[in-house]
Amino acid sequence: MKHFIKNIIYKLTDRVLFIHKVYAAKDVLKRLKYHGENVSINQPSFISGSDSITLGDNVVINSFSHFWGEGGITIGNNCMIASHCAITSVTHNTKAQLFNQENIGKPIVIGDNVWIGAHAMILPGVTIGNNVIIGAGTLVNKDLPSNAVYIGTPVKKLHDLDQFTS
Image (cartoon, rainbow, N blue to C red; front, side, top):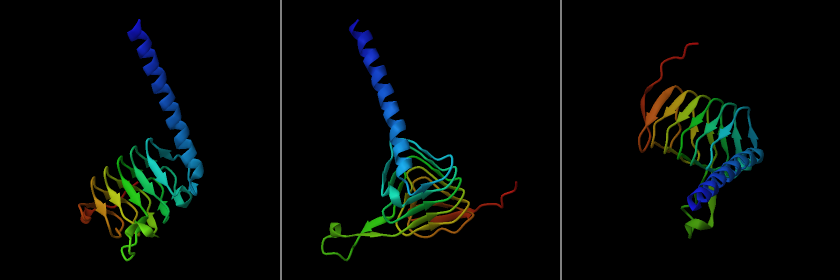
């Protein structure tokens, strides 16, 4: 009997957590500067500065991703962001006497049809072109032109993508 009651409590707890996660995702979407149609933010994820973040249509942000949007983040249409990615548009001022005294915001722009692999990190001030694949674990610290695959830490171009046909 004790085991039976324990199972019911676990099942109810799981249901409450699921409902909480759904409401949390909807609440985040409401607070974004703008979001297009068919946007999915899988929880748990961390998003700060949501009023400076713009998401296009058909954007998927997977679990455990972290966004610091205070400097501005714009993500185009048809983008996939894998789990455990970090996208930060703010950094600390390295010229300040104490590094934590001042933050500097630099906007990030991510084009259309971009796939960012798991555990990638996008640093402040970066622009990523259209039709770009960023490999898992990549550190993006500079602008990336369109139509290519990028990997590594720091990022480097692996190869161009073939022209897309429809």
